[in-house]
Length: 412
Image (cartoon, helix red, strand yellow):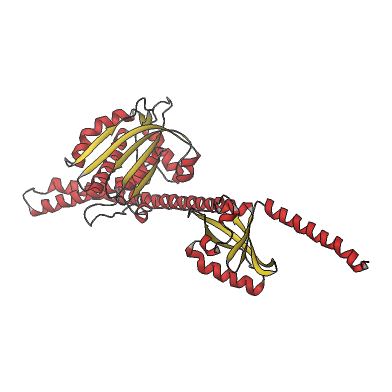
């Protein structure tokens, strides 16, 4: 006859079995990856872990060393956390590291580990969360913030450059005026006449620099009109060919039925000339420069990449070279005034800054893709003209000035 104690043991045993089965079911159905490690070898994985590691079934993982599934860069961290769990029973706080799928692909994860008993022996239970989507979002946010900071920096530099150029331009007008007056009163045969000519040349060169600064700051008077971009580029090809030299092949690929734009033709020539000269320098006088156009509808993907971009329809002008390309640190400063990688005396660092200002003044934006030994691609997006009449230079000048709180009158 069984004792009272024996009679109660069976129901308790069955209850424990049912509870264990319930917990196992919860673990098996959990969307969070879980595994158990004993003596650094995997002894259990749930279906979510099988999926996380890119396996087809648990047998591919059970019996393997846990460090085989950890990115080598995180081995020291994984061993440290294991010791921490062994000493304290729980791994806190959550830790981030990279696991490796069976095909070797790294996956960022967040892990919480706890010391448990498994089949009567000490083991570690780990709950793992795939944070690939979260990390991608964080990276996108950082890149967006960096683009915004860069745009704000260029805007601030533009305000400063525009203010300085405006005042300097007034001073140069006085210098040129007095120099011209003095030249009319001095005998051309005297040495003083030559000195005054040098002053005049230097002042006019400085005036050219201030005009470029004003273009960068979007404070230059322009005369925009409805423009056929393909026709304008075609008309400039002979000039561009002379600029880039005989050793560089210039290719032209116009799009069919290209949308019209609103732009000052002289400013478009300036953009083309600067981009093609930059491409010529990149190929070292021997290579290919390709100019092309296309219609482009800008959506969220590009507006997230470029803070200056706004959704809409654009005609896109592309200038590509197969030259040396640029490193990321150069790209970050590409449109800053006076930034140049050329030798002293070979460039002012205002060419691309001027292009940036001109495109922004015409309500467009630019993108640049480049890598060392790959080449560089500049893409200029200019808003589609939907049939609006020409805009006077006066109104465009005042619009640019109003945005920056300056007096467009041109006085001192």
